Structure formats: structure tokens, C-alpha cells
Amino acid sequence: MRDSHEESINCPIAEVFSFIADGENNSKWRSGVISIEKTSNDDVGLGSSYAQVLSGPGGRRIDGDYVITRFEKPTCIEFRVTAGPARPEGRFNLVPVNDSTTTVSFSLDLEPKGMMKLMSPMIKKQLRAETRQLSKLKEVLESAANH
Image (cartoon, rainbow, N blue to C red; front, side, top):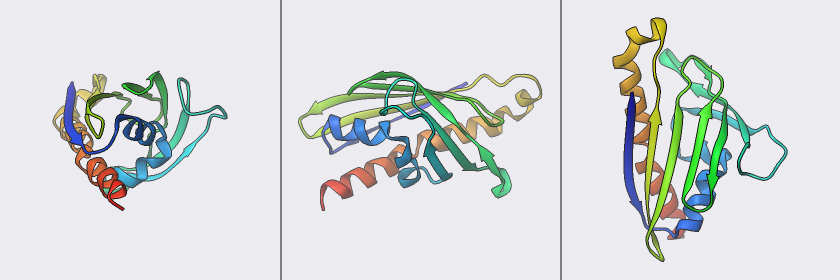
């Protein structure tokens, strides 16, 4: 199952890419992130890993650690969730509209297996909620650019 969403952000592509690439910014625009910390010692890029704690159903804390699996500056970042009950793969595609505007698409893919298939409607709803948070990313980046 897959969900994706797209937003145009009034910010140059390099700034948008850098903000998204630094996973420690997740808590600034993703409401479910309780904490996040980079766990790899290298610069942000291919193979970078993050320990992430998310607010799960009923406010339960769940792990959502992930690793960057594709890093093509400034147009594409892909990641795979490596801990937690659901382990989607995600992708950010960035396209410059002009020097000051960037179109960002965010997609999440997850194939439920076993008992998780019974939760497909809830999972689909959660994927949708996650990708729609791009509107908050837009708000955060555009307000920073205007100050």
C-alpha cells in the first residue's frame, strides 16, 4: 500500500533538501515524533541512521528508527524504517520550480504481512496522515524564510 502527497514550498531547493536530509529536524514538522537522534557518525548522507521515538496508538511510545538508503543531493532522499511494528519505505522527491520555489513529494510504501493485514485500513489512514504533514514542513520552512 502506498500514499503520497505533494506541496510547493517557497524556498530554494538546496534549503529544502538540507532541512529534510537532517532527520533531527523531523520533530519540527512531524507531529508524532517524540524524539530523534542521529546514530551514525558520518555526515548526513547515504547510510545515515537515526533512532526515532514516535507517538503510537493510544499515545504509546514506539520505535521508528530509520536509515537513509538513497541520497541524491538536491533531488532525492529515500529511507527505510528499521525498528517498530510497521516498517515502511519512504521517498522525498524535490523539483525546483524556480530559484525560490521547490515542489516536494513525499511517499510511503508498506506491505502489511500476516496479522498486520487485518489492520490495513488503520495503516492506510496513518500513511496518509504522515504524508500530509508536508503542509507543516511548508509552514515551517516558509516562516523561517520570512524571518
